[in-house]
Image (cartoon, rainbow over all chains, first blue to last red; front, top):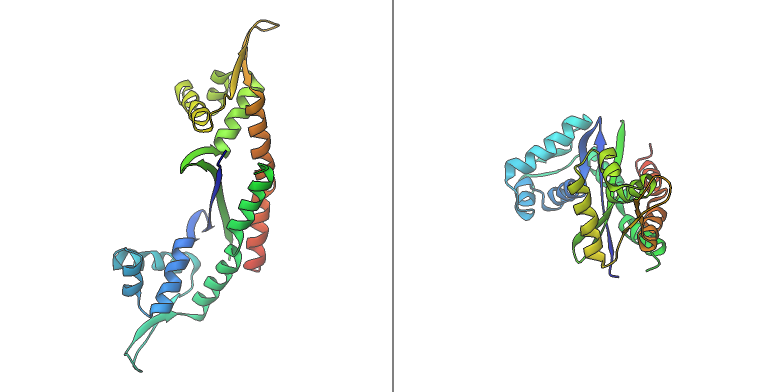
Length: 112
Length: 112
């Protein structure tokens, strides 16, 4: 019997979605690419959609996630604030190996 | 910061949903109440909906889950087949303590 366990985790505040794998991946991509527009394009969503998600997290947590910087080689860009980077780090620490852990528990319980 | 982690797990076969918390709870209720109709009522769904879910699991796994028995005090009723009971037992073993485990990992990662 080829069974596969699937799982999904997310973070809420007062019952409202704050973080998900997708949202944290988006934050990481913004920091990596130095651009919200480029990150939105990578994830195949409109700029305003990506921007809306980020604003939603900021509002729900009450912390700024993005900061612009200008000048330097290549001109300005967008990067994560220290608080934004901290949030990504913590979420990544939380999800690291979690899928594998759930799969292992499943394999043991179902004697696969 | 009052953050709460939420999670959802389910089991698929060939990319199709087979088991979820809700489905296994329904199977357990049928066995406990001796009746698919009574279990459907407890979960607030129509009989045909509950029956459809059970049939879906049976078809996707290729095993019978319910068996009728007749006679005895109180007349006939429906209960789980040995395979159905085994499936419920395994799924319960899998999910036991899983939410707490995820919450603990989350609390550690976010230093809550």
